Amino acid sequence: MAYRTSALRIDRDNALRLRILRCAQARVTEAGFGALTMQALAEDVGIATGSLYRHFQNKGELAAEVFARASQREVDAMALALKTQAPAPRRLAAGLAQFAARAWHSRRLAYALIAEPVDPEVDKQRLIFRQAYAELLVEVLDEGVSQGDFRPQHTQLSAACLVGAIAESLVGPLSPSACAARETGQPALALGSITEDLIAFCLSAVGAKELSA
Amino acid sequence: MAYRTSALRIDRDNALRLRILRCAQARVTEAGFGALTMQALAEDVGIATGSLYRHFQNKGELAAEVFARASQREVDAMALALKTQAPAPRRLAAGLAQFAARAWHSRRLAYALIAEPVDPEVDKQRLIFRQAYAELLVEVLDEGVSQGDFRPQHTQLSAACLVGAIAESLVGPLSPSACAARETGQPALALGSITEDLIAFCLSAVGAKELSA
Image (cartoon, rainbow over all chains, first blue to last red; front, side, top):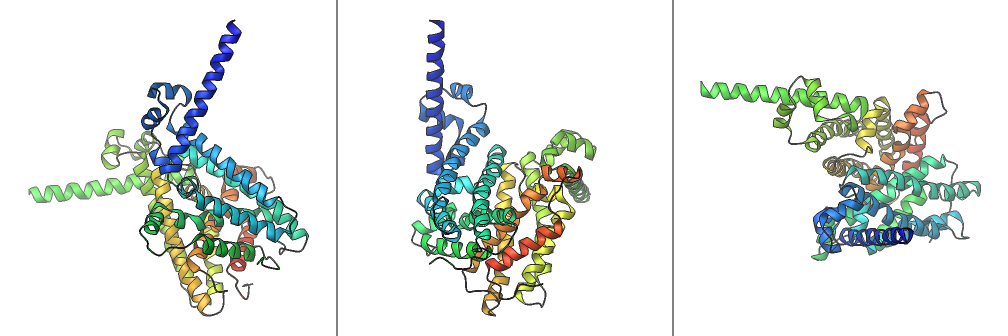
């Protein structure tokens, strides 16, 4: 009986933890990490703030986990987009297009993940996930170089450069001020134009012999 | 007399503030923002921790000012390196080479500025200074495109991509773990090789007609 009781408690704890994380991500998706306060979140979940602290020591730890869960989904999506039978330049272009499209579809969350000033715990996760993206890209670059589709290069350095270029290209267009300007009808870059330019930049950078149409 | 007394006090306050900032930067240059605690800094300066808080409300505000002062020096140095009579591709290459060389010369500080996980106040400054670098680069790109030295492109987007690529290419090589490995004699990328690859990546990306030797 004691065993069953504690197993039940663990299940309940896990379910609550997951619910907290989902509510936290909903807040970040809606309005960024700035909107993620322990008090507001406790209200969303419908628990006391003290109970929240039994699951997450502080806001930094919570924000880092929200970040890691959301970023892992993006890494997985890019891994899938890159994993086709197409030649390396086309795979790279597909990965870039998909990353930009997903970011565009959920701009506030994408900005939060890529650039929003936030706790150092999240910065630490950013470094880890940028490394994960770089590893996916190295694989495509290595194949492209070996097939003669890309110029010879230090693929690890190029992959890091690509990760930086992709992230930085989206910081401006995704920023809350750019989104606000767009909503009030001011001229702004459209997704299609950003994606096209980003793909041209990246394929040129790695010396793609034939730019994919 | 009252006037003279208060003018004197302001001078003394400013001098102390400057001394605090210099000691703070020395700490960051030596061991990163992680070594910048209010208590240790007060000891370096030789004042009470309470006096430190009369000049800076908290560590975030202090770290942001250390960051901004150090970053402004880098932006100024790059502006100078870019401002020559040479054709755009050569100016771009010179700017990149100098940025990498300066970072390499003061690796711990460069890593702290570019990537160290740190207070959100510093993240905010990072976004501002990345924009400053981008503005310098746009000018070179615009000239290069108009002279036919670079391919036609959306130069603001390309400039952002370059800023991201430059920063991200150095994160790995400058990281404390890479520096520690280098010190124990493990094989690691050298500055020359990183610079060469970074220049090739960036010049290819913007479609430089003739890669500078």
